[in-house]
Length: 134
Image 1 (cartoon, rainbow, N blue to C red):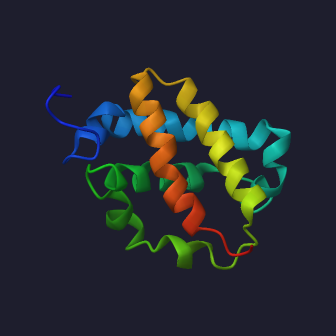
Image 2 (image 1 turned 45 degrees about the horizontal axis):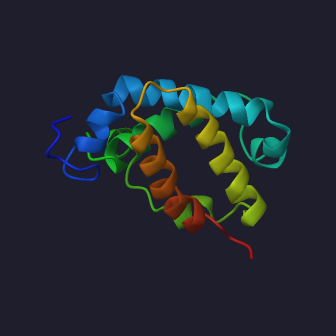
Image 3 (image 1 turned 60 degrees about the horizontal axis):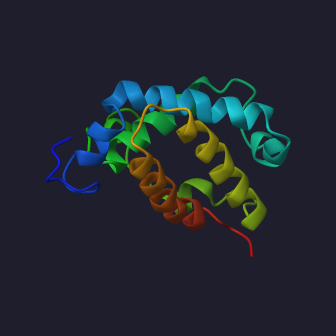
């Protein structure tokens, strides 16, 4: 990433994340934590036993969300975060468990520390928009 481009500017965040390959690694580790953290038991139960598609969807979503290619749209069509999660009982605890998995997955990535902070702060927005309960 050029020093003159801030995260969120064009594809700067996508580049900082290691492009699609970096997002695939992040998604893999995210779902590892969802599979293993006791705090994530409830949200893990909202997923299929086989997480292959979930991993693919997350990496593809993050690609477009971070200013890279809109890979989710190409494969799965448009996404509306609230509508995509409207059938699930997601409250504050579930949102926070999702963010915890992401925080742990981000910690393992070879990203700049300020980018890791940026990511978790920015991901709070779609995580909060996924909530269906108070």
